[in-house]
Amino acid sequence: MFDTAHPTEPTAALTVRAGETVFDLYADDPELSVERFRLTHDVPALRDRESARVDHYRRLFTRRLGERFAGEPDGELRAAVTGAAVVAAHNLALRGWLADGGRPDRLDDYRARFRKVIDLLPGEPALHDVTGRLEAAVARLERHA
Image (cartoon, one colour):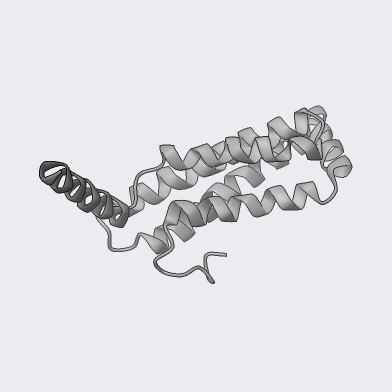
């Protein structure tokens, strides 16, 4: 997903879009996904393996984000914070859905919960610039109204 993304796509949106593909994989077979979730909680060796996979995903996201933020001030820190936050929010939402029985009629609720991470991520510099220009334009319009 990172390889095919448009360079100007906001990174937060791209990262959440990438995370949502995992929801799709689990939603393809909810019964199997719920059983897998149960086993990874009941069997210590599987629980340890699942923890290692979560750390792998975090490192993968951080590495790809690091490439995207290369050359930016605090790019490495921003990549680490964004990667950790997205993976944590994703796991919270996905595990919540699985603990809720993996009900297809509730999947959109848990996706929405995951998407809230966007509001918590470090902002896009380009978006801050646009916001500043829009606020200045509104202030000018209000003075002339």
